[in-house]
Length: 539
Image (tube, rainbow, N blue to C red):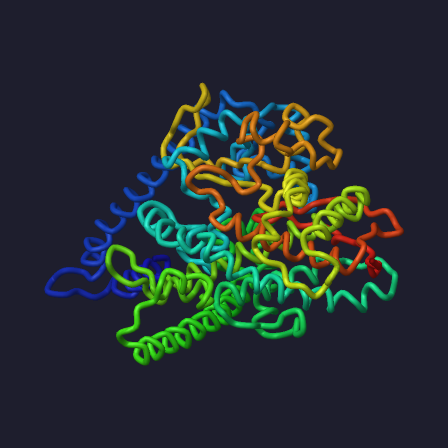
């Protein structure tokens, strides 16, 4: 628009001496530009009016909420200025003590309302009215598109309905074979590290194992990340994860306009193209295989048993055979769901497994109880593959997993975006606000979990289950209609891998004390790694 105005101005200057049919060119141009100027001014006024109304509405309602003093434009940015990502949770913890269970924070011009009251959380998560994700999820949309994690409205409802059956127990049973095989590779990869007797950061190794599991489960492909951590796909996944992390805590590139001008945007485009190209090639190859198989088996009917046990099907295979409103899913829709499964299925389980191993290292008596249980179930043959029935019998390990997720929820923050101004339990939440629910702080609140710093799996036993008092106090997998669709898959994977490690190694804490600090993004990450020692187990 500025360039158009410049050209017009130059024409006006140059045409003062010229006439066209008795009219000066400047007069003609003035007559042409005047309506344009009126429209531009009107649009500017309208835009300012909309902004004023929007912020006026927000300010009116948030004025009744507590929160730190905010400044124009920068909001509460000074609170987080020059702070590391690991300090974010600490700052929020201080604000919770100061302003209570519901308060507002301005991240520049973006309004965030922190909510940790279980009664408010119950309304927000249980109602289908509040299923739209917060602004932070926009950072992963270029990669995941409108997959199950990021979609909304009718598309989310229809796709959730299509995908839910793929996590039926018969389907899950076939994935146990993948869990067991990749866990076997994992303990072999750990052997040289165990033999040194020194502490090491186990988080990177767990990441590669989880990536192997999810690639084979989701796409039916073996990327062998544990054996080849420098493959192009593995590096691309690592790079996109890092780029997404950076946007969380850089308050300038949180805004899309600034991000599009940054070098990180150009990196992201390149990485996402590589990720999409890989997934697209797998989809096309798998589609051709299924068509060829279908043509060679015309007239054969598959039994219900074929769905799970006899024919092992990747998540991708099921999507290729699914329909929405009577039509097959498009390749783009399939790619979005596969990429979503990849993202949610490897980062979250990496976090959970790593913190679970660390917790067992810190609590040797609990580790011994877990080992005794799995030895009773699996026996002394370390090479014996586990089955789904065996994993389901590991009840004490269930409690240990729950306690781990209380202290270290894989998803430390749950975000929702208000589409309309709503009153909940006497508090007004304005349209446009991002609501931030924090399972990390909920799980460490002594009002809900007495002696919260103590690692006590027994708090989740049947007799005195911490989940039953109010299920919205404990939400490591979220809750309500938008809860984690793959939570059973995740728990089975955790059990399989951890039980395999314990059959081969005793997990010990590092000799040197490690300070715990966490980075809260879409996934909870350790700031300095998860350090353990491994000792070959004799029995």
